[in-house]
Image (cartoon, rainbow, N blue to C red; front, side, top):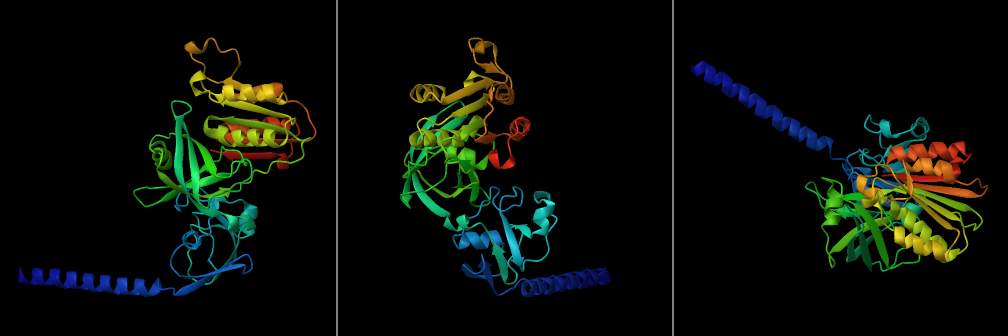
Amino acid sequence: MVISLLAVAVTVGIFLGLTVMLLAAEKRLVDYGICTLSINEGSVVFEQLGGITLLSTLYENKVFIPSACGGKGSCGYCKITLISGGGPILPTETPYMTRTEIKSGVRLACQVKLKENVEIRIPEELLEVKEYKSVVSLVRDLTYDIKELNFDLISPEEIKHRPGQYVQIMAPSPDGHVFRAYSISSPVYEKNKVQLMVRLVPGGIASTYLHGLKEGDEVIFTGPFGEFKLNEDPEANVVLVGGGAGMAPMANIIYTIYHQWPDRKCHLFFGCRTTKDIFYFENFETLSKKHPNFKFTYALSDPLSEDEKWDGDTGFIHLSLDKLLPVTHKRQAFLCGPPPMIEAVIEILKDKKYRDEEIFYDKF
């Protein structure tokens, strides 16, 4: 009995000793000291205690790049080009990369730790992205699950963005703050506010937070982000295709166009399941009477019996697009909606000889 107890004590002692040694070794191994992060050939340089990710390093130093998942490596948005340092690409990154990107040194900033001096390259416009403090000035229901929210800017007092860009809302979560992307629905000439359209996603961290806001609440967001670039040639026709909360960038583009080019041609195609999902219809009726070159088509994909009075299109919105899209030479298409809709629409646009550079899209 005494021998058994002694053996147990020795085993426990050895285990505790090894644990202490491993902890001490780990502490030494993760002590990377001060590392340097150089951006765009040294145009911006930070010194940071090593051991955290490049994404955290950038955010701590007020350089904001896209990231929708809070740095968990599940969205693939936080792409940077690694020039030197950072180690080899990880298996967690490759599903979000093309072969060309891998060969070019593209990495996910949330998966690369700052363990040594690192040099990266990012688009110059991301260095202009800012953090905004705002106050909620309007909350209203657009449908049973989509709210429209206005955020009046406190600091900075103005925002400059292109039609169709988005911001990233900072929302609280059990694991700390996370950022989620939402397209700006207010037109570019309204510089003192940002308007969003937010669909409530069951269990969604950010949408639940945003749907719970009241007038007077303060909200922080970063932006603007996004690749949408509206052709400023008034002769270029604009085609917009969206569904649900994908109306946000469409509304931004439409009202921006008719503020600047009253006679420009633009056609919106918008998909809804039932009439309960329709919103902004009256707004666009009013706009089309003022600007005859603005056309809009709504289509119901799953009409209910109570929708029998609906006299518009039915079926998926890409079918309406295929039927009504005119043949033009100068043109652009902007798409925002669920991935299956985007893929179906792109196929039709390609059939109608749209080039890749004429098509912009966000999959939400």
